[in-house]
Amino acid sequence: MELQEKISVPIFTAVEREVFLQDVYPLRRPAVLRGVDLGPCVERWTVEYLGNKGGDRDVKIHVSSEAQMDFLHKNFVYKTLPFNEFVKRASEMNHTDFFLSEDESYYLRSLGEDIRKEPAELNKQFPALADDFHIPPFFELEQFFSSVFRISSCGLQLWTHYDVMDNLLAQVTGRKRVVLYSPQDALHLYLSGDKSEVLDIDAPDLKRFPEFVKARRYECVLEPGDLLFIPALWFHNTLALQFGVGVNVFWRHLPADSYDKKDPYGNKDPVAAARALQTLERALHCLDELPAEYRDFYGRRMIQRIQKQTHCDEKNTTLPSSPLTTPA
Ligand SMILES: O=C(O)CCC(=O)C(=O)O
Image (cartoon, rainbow, N blue to C red; front, side, top):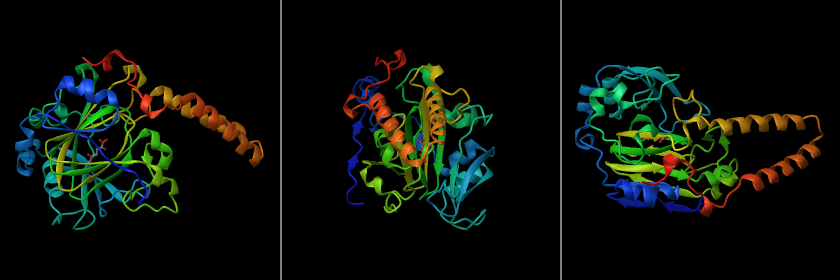
C-alpha cells in the first residue's frame, strides 16, 4: 500500500456562509469545517440525555460481530431496538444483552416515517432532540433533503460508497476517521453499484484489487463539533474511533427533477444517469451474439467513445449550473 497517494483533507476554521459558498463549495472537494456553530447538541448529547429525550421509539439498526461491516458477505443482521436501549448498547464495548455476541457493534439505520418513500428528518423522528442541532445555513431551505442521525459503536467501519447529493457530516460527539476518494478514481475502486468491493482499505488484497493503489486517499479525523463537506459522488469510508453521534445533512444541488423521486436515502443515481446505465446494459447485450474477439474490439471502441464524450479534466470540474448553486 506504499504507493497510494495520501492527501489530508483541508481544514477551514470558523467558516461562515459567505466563505463556504465562495471559497469552499465551488472547489467540489471535501473540506473539514471547524468552529461552525452546531447548537447546544455539542454539550448536551450524552448517552443519558439522548436516551431520555429520544425515548423508546423503535429504531432499525445494523448489528455485527465484526466491526468492519461487509456488504458483500452481509456480516451483519437487521434488528429493532428502542432508541434509548440502542444508544446505551452502542456506547458500550461489552454487552450484557446482545443479539450475536457480547462485543457486537451497532449502527443506526436512519429512516423516514414511511421507510420506502420518505427521507429521514430529525425534526420528524426525534423532535425533542432536533432543536439542539442547528443546521448550518450553507444551502437554501428549499434545497433541503434530509437530516440523518449517524450513531455508531466505537470501531465500527462503514464500507466505501458514494451518495448523489452534496452533504455535510456533522460529528457532534466522538471522533471519526473518514477516508475519501475522488469520483475520478472510480475505476480504481472496484465498484458494485454505489459501493466499493475493497472492504479493507487499510490492508487491501492487492492480488484481487491491483488498481486500488492508484486511488488517491484523502483522509481526515473529525473531532467533536467538526463538519465534513462531502461533495456528491465523492466516495467515503467512515471508521468510528470512539462511540459517536453525528448528523448528516443532505441537500439537492441539481434541479429537483434530476433526482429519482423514490429515493429515501439520497443515493439513487440521478434519473438521466440511471437511464444511461440501463441503455449501456442493452448496448452490451447487443454484442452478445458476436465472437469474443469482436466483443473485445467493440467494447474497446465503446470505451474510447465514452471517454471522449464524458471525461473532464479534474481542474475543470465546475459547479453544475443551477440557480440554486450560485453563491450568494
Ligand atoms: O458517519 C457515518 O458513519 C456514515 C456517513 C455516511 O455514510 C455518509 O455520509 O453518507
